[in-house]
Image 1 (tube, helix red, strand yellow):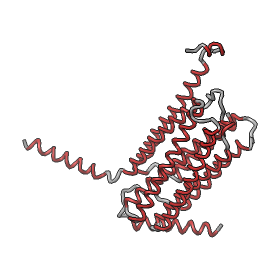
Image 2: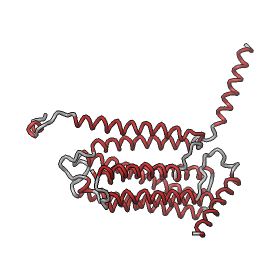
Image 3: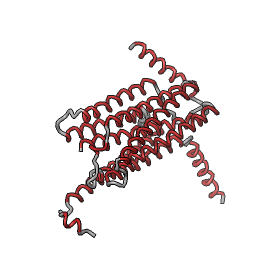
Image 4: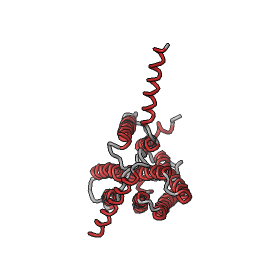
Length: 140
Length: 206
């Protein structure tokens, strides 16, 4: 345990040194500040957030499928956030905030596309005139 | 006449300083590309959400999906994500050999992922559950296949960058390219979270 924490301190120092030394020649590149600790945190969180949904579904842990679906979806959303923060290094300051602005715009479109399609098509299905097998056979 | 010239010169000076302010837009441009890719996947997810229940009296998710295999596949992609992260850490330390080694490991995990997915597709098609069987299977193959195609092209890109890195070393351009691929690779892992949750886990529960 102590060895592990030592290495990560070491890595952190290296990364900081590198930034100071190379601060002037690759300026304005928008290079993220990467650390061993950051990647490992993201990885371990991802493993936990992946293992629990698979366990819930494969082991049939909860009696209600609906509750399981909600929990699994919640885990997916949290894991996506973990990926964005620890692997994609997204924060409000990168590229002067333009990355975040593009992401927010995209997320709005994603939510409209997904919820709109599902909502409209679900109600189309529900409100269709009931059809018998006989009607189906006589379809053009 | 001279009244007209003076403001024109001032305008020029104004535009020049603004132009200089934008130093390099590659990373932002690549991010915007990823966001457009995200919209493609959103449309495919919406399509799967709408058509995912239309089996046309054919096989459903419970008959077709092998969650053990999906779990192995997810592990492959997650491991490739962290090994790419290690490659980026070695790049920060300017160690070329170690960077190349981690990139090669990342590529192997990526190949394993694509291989397992192709095996799964092959099994399904051999059982008569190909993309033409039902709307559910058409949308399934389109969504998962598009993701697999992205990963395949990511592997090609990875190999290209490894060759370039061997030849040129850590130039500013190479660092930028490796950073772009890093975003792409982690982004594909992020999309896979949506795929295994929305398609596989929820499909089996449905």
